[in-house]
Length: 324
Image 1 (cartoon, rainbow, N blue to C red):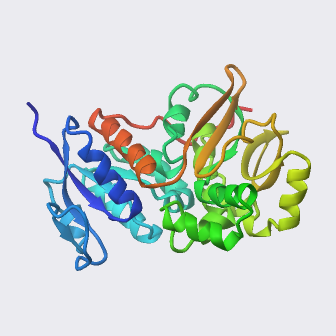
Image 2: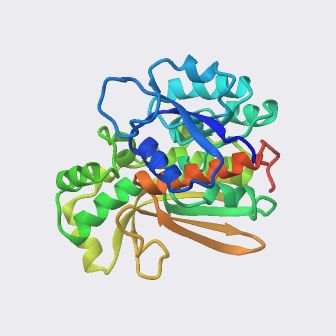
Image 3: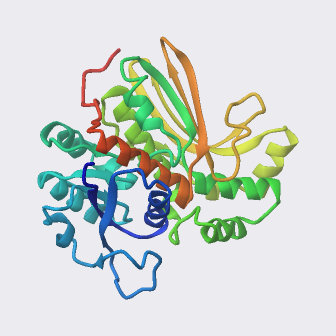
């Protein structure tokens, strides 16, 4: 029997704890958490059997660590840790959509230069395996449009505001209490979080880099009570919709609140759920629906990436000429 691979884990917040809990439920996976790097080692935590440190080099420079899993909210630090881990021959799994979305040129280079795998399913759709699908079945097809709900936090807030007439403030506090939104929810509610995910999907769909700085982005804070009443009177709902499509050889990207009707695949996607619709020229439309926020769904995506890493899976995507 092969010895279990050793994991160095960065971060033990909502997603880190979710991964830890998920891993305990999969004793057949030949991997164990060896060390956990956190900002403060004096805080009370679950996982008393784990070794905690605040020194990243204890993981990055340890030749016994095979796999680094990065689940922190500091994009700048995450980039340093990921690159150093790959440089030191360690496989890396990340959920940091901000770091990846802002560094796609470097990410593409990492895929080409380093032998270890760098996977990041949890960075895009929570519990939805969209990146793996884009890199697998849809990889050799021409994708013409991606549209969906890519932020479970904002969808949860909008759902509570519309179904239960909650104020924005009450819905946000509830989302934070349930672990669907961060203590600083700015990226979620502004649409920027979804825009990073859209950039990552564009890279995997087209082999192109599209910075979210060029996207049309609008916050859910612009949604008023009057908007909600208007949507209800017309039998519609308001959703924060992310759209990526080719039109006349140009890729258009936007994240903004939209009215959606009962005939729209996004209409019934409520609370913290996400939905992603992918239209390909050959196979048509594919719709993925699942939990987009929360410790366990996102932690499950990390578990799936861990299984792939153990099988030496690598993404096939690299920058390539446009298909049109």
